[in-house]
Image (cartoon, rainbow, N blue to C red; front, top):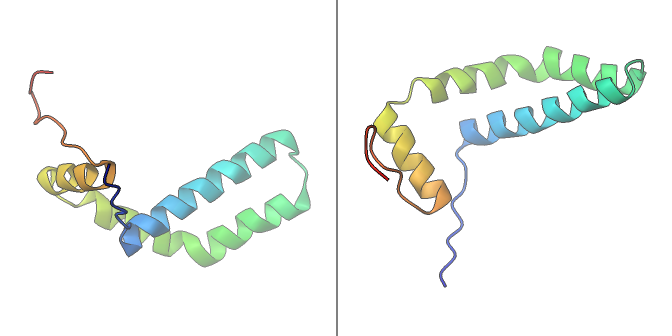
Length: 87
Protein backbone atom coordinates (compact mmCIF):
# COMPACT_ATOMS: atom_id res chain seq x y z
CA UNK A 1 0.00 0.00 0.00
CA UNK A 2 1.46 3.33 -1.07
CA UNK A 3 0.77 6.45 0.95
CA UNK A 4 1.59 9.76 -0.66
CA UNK A 5 1.45 12.88 1.43
CA UNK A 6 0.12 15.80 -0.58
CA UNK A 7 0.67 19.16 1.01
CA UNK A 8 -1.77 22.02 0.98
CA UNK A 9 -0.66 25.15 -0.82
CA UNK A 10 -0.36 28.40 1.16
CA UNK A 11 -3.93 29.56 0.47
CA UNK A 12 -5.43 26.15 1.26
CA UNK A 13 -3.41 25.95 4.47
CA UNK A 14 -4.38 29.48 5.56
CA UNK A 15 -8.10 28.87 4.99
CA UNK A 16 -8.02 25.43 6.61
CA UNK A 17 -6.26 26.72 9.73
CA UNK A 18 -8.69 29.63 10.00
CA UNK A 19 -11.68 27.35 9.60
CA UNK A 20 -10.45 25.07 12.38
CA UNK A 21 -9.70 28.03 14.63
CA UNK A 22 -13.10 29.63 14.05
CA UNK A 23 -14.97 26.38 14.64
CA UNK A 24 -13.07 25.96 17.90
CA UNK A 25 -13.74 29.54 18.93
CA UNK A 26 -17.42 29.17 18.06
CA UNK A 27 -17.68 26.06 20.21
CA UNK A 28 -15.83 27.81 23.03
CA UNK A 29 -18.24 30.75 22.85
CA UNK A 30 -21.22 28.41 23.07
CA UNK A 31 -19.67 26.57 26.02
CA UNK A 32 -18.45 29.69 27.85
CA UNK A 33 -19.98 32.78 26.22
CA UNK A 34 -18.33 35.28 28.55
CA UNK A 35 -14.78 33.87 28.52
CA UNK A 36 -12.55 36.86 27.86
CA UNK A 37 -9.66 34.74 26.57
CA UNK A 38 -11.90 33.36 23.80
CA UNK A 39 -13.08 36.87 22.95
CA UNK A 40 -9.46 38.02 22.82
CA UNK A 41 -8.54 35.19 20.44
CA UNK A 42 -11.47 36.02 18.17
CA UNK A 43 -10.64 39.72 18.19
CA UNK A 44 -6.99 38.93 17.41
CA UNK A 45 -8.04 36.79 14.46
CA UNK A 46 -10.40 39.45 13.15
CA UNK A 47 -7.86 42.27 13.42
CA UNK A 48 -4.69 40.42 12.39
CA UNK A 49 -5.60 37.48 10.15
CA UNK A 50 -9.09 37.79 8.71
CA UNK A 51 -8.12 39.96 5.73
CA UNK A 52 -5.45 37.56 4.46
CA UNK A 53 -7.69 34.54 5.06
CA UNK A 54 -10.53 36.17 3.11
CA UNK A 55 -8.11 37.01 0.28
CA UNK A 56 -6.96 33.38 0.18
CA UNK A 57 -10.55 32.16 0.23
CA UNK A 58 -11.38 34.40 -2.72
CA UNK A 59 -8.42 33.02 -4.68
CA UNK A 60 -9.59 29.47 -3.96
CA UNK A 61 -13.13 30.35 -5.07
CA UNK A 62 -11.81 31.71 -8.37
CA UNK A 63 -10.22 28.40 -9.35
CA UNK A 64 -11.96 26.70 -12.28
CA UNK A 65 -14.06 23.64 -11.47
CA UNK A 66 -11.72 21.33 -13.35
CA UNK A 67 -8.76 22.57 -11.31
CA UNK A 68 -10.72 22.11 -8.09
CA UNK A 69 -11.70 18.56 -9.05
CA UNK A 70 -8.08 17.72 -9.84
CA UNK A 71 -6.94 19.19 -6.54
CA UNK A 72 -9.58 17.24 -4.61
CA UNK A 73 -8.49 14.06 -6.38
CA UNK A 74 -4.85 14.80 -5.56
CA UNK A 75 -5.58 15.45 -1.89
CA UNK A 76 -8.01 12.57 -1.40
CA UNK A 77 -6.15 10.01 -3.48
CA UNK A 78 -9.05 9.17 -5.79
CA UNK A 79 -10.85 10.58 -8.80
CA UNK A 80 -14.30 12.08 -8.61
CA UNK A 81 -16.80 11.44 -11.35
CA UNK A 82 -17.33 14.30 -13.79
CA UNK A 83 -20.44 16.41 -13.27
CA UNK A 84 -23.44 14.38 -14.38
CA UNK A 85 -21.44 11.12 -14.22
CA UNK A 86 -22.99 7.89 -13.04
CA UNK A 87 -21.83 6.00 -10.00
